[in-house]
Structures are given as structure tokens and as C-alpha cells.
Amino acid sequence: MIKVFIDGKAGTTGLRIYERLEKRDDVTVVSLSEQLRKDAAARREAMNGADVVFLCLPDDAAREAVTLLTNPKTVLIDASTAHRTADEWAYGFPELSKVHREKIRNSKRIANPGCYASGFIALVYPLTAAGIVPCDYPFVCHAVSGYSGGGKKAIEDYTACDRDKALESPRLYALTLEHKHLPEMMKECSLTQKPIFNPYICDFECGMSVNVPLFASLCKGKISKEGLKDLYREHYRGSHFVGVAEEESGFLAANALNGTNRLQIFVNGGDERMILTARLDNLGKGASGAAIQNMNIALGLDERLGL
Image 1 (cartoon, rainbow, N blue to C red):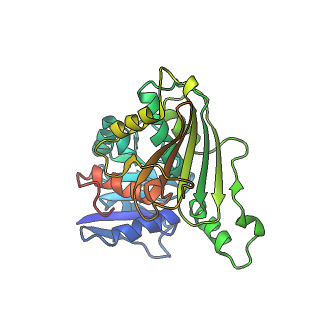
Image 2: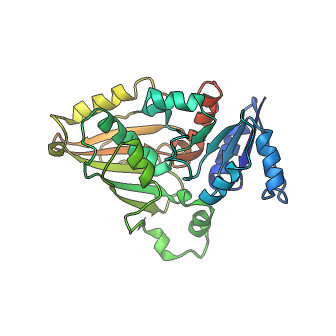
Image 3: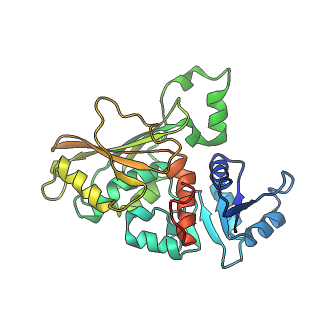
């Protein structure tokens, strides 16, 4: 029986991980009482007695939690931003390359990717890895997410009976052009120029659409819309959760993959100007689903188990 401890189970990601794991007969989730869930000694004991620990905490709290773990056999999966660019941690996106997958398989420290970052990196990593776009390409990324991505406070705000009228409209944020996902987006894609990233939080619970425009004239060599689709198909060949989807006419809904661990890639437009889109559940492949997939890989299990 796999013993799991979720530090931060009361949060949005922690709850989703718990909901998925409680349906499995090979996992037992260790829980602390309300009185002990912030007690360092109780947390230390639970962490060091577990086979797998998920950190679903703010960044500073996640860094502090890491210091509590001394058991070298425990797999630690951090869902915060704290360790995503740390070289000694595996970046938890196994579909990106064989190197990523093997590092996850052999690591006891795994940093779960950010939700927006998962969409952006799924689109851009294959392009830079293949040398199709230069590392200083002026990327722009537009993205929309359901309000669950904002955590418990955002969910409370959006579901309140007397909520602010402004919440009925899509709301652009990160207006300084700084966002906590940018460092991992740049590092994983080997970018030397910081992308312009403008995310929107919208009046629906779950789902995410991450969109990257691409100009063929700024790329290396000759590329085409169909050629890019073939590139993505080849890059993600054999993947259980990431793949190229058929074009959708008219509208592309952000919430079509809710409740899954899937990520779909779309290439729309023409051969000169293209729009690359990644669609995923921000709480699935963007959070809890990816965390469980990483757990399965690190433990040598079928990565689809429970997903």
C-alpha cells in the first residue's frame, strides 16, 4: 500500500489530489486533524513516514516544508512555484523529452509545472528543441483560465451571492508583464527573451486556453501550418495525455477537457500567420492530474493509474 501525505490538503489542488487518490485501492492518504495540520512536529512525522508527499502550499511555506523531510526514500512533489527552476529538482512534464521523463523516474524531488506554463511550454518547447524558432523569438502569449486557478479566495469571490459586477467580465491581470510562471516558461524552452504574457481570469470554474501567435517569417527555415501539426504529432507520439487535436470550426471552448489529465494542441490560421493553442483543465494537467502522473512515474507505476 502506497502511503501518501498531502501537506495543504485544504487548498484547491490538494483537494483535487485527494479526491483522485481516495478512489484508488493501492493508496492510503495520511491525514492530520484540524488542530495538527499546521503543527511542524506532526507534519514532520507524517512526511517522513510517507512514500509520497505532495506540497500544496504557498511558496515560502513549501520551502519551509522541504526542510522537514529527512527520509531519503520519500518522493516529494511540490505544486508551488518554489522549486520549478531549481536544477536539482525534476521538472514534472514527462512528455517534453526522454530526459524529462527519466529525471522524474529517478528523482525524489519533483516540481509540478504551473498551469499556464504547461500550456505555453507544450507549444514552444518542441519549436525551440527542433530549432524552428530562435531562442530570442519575441513570443506573446494570451491565456484564459477559469476562476478556480485563483485558489480558494477567488472561488469564494466568484461564487458569492453578492459578488462584484466586475467578476462577470473577463479580467486581465499581471499588468506589470511579470508573472510567477515566466521563469519556468523561459528556462524549459531555453528562451533568452522574456515573453509578453497576458492572462485573463474568467467567469467559469475550470478550464484553460493558452494561445501563442507565430509568424512564419520570423522562424528558421520554411514552415507551414501542416508542417507544425506534423512536428507536434511526432514530438508527442506515444503520449497518453498530450496530442494534436482536430481543428474546431468557429469557437474553441476552454473548458472542454475538464476533469481529465489531457492537453490538446491546435494549430490554426494559415501558413504565414498561425495561432498555436493548448487546451487543458487548469486543475487537471495543470495541477492535480499532473502531480499524480508524476507520482506514478516516480514509483514505477503505469502513469495513467487513477487518471
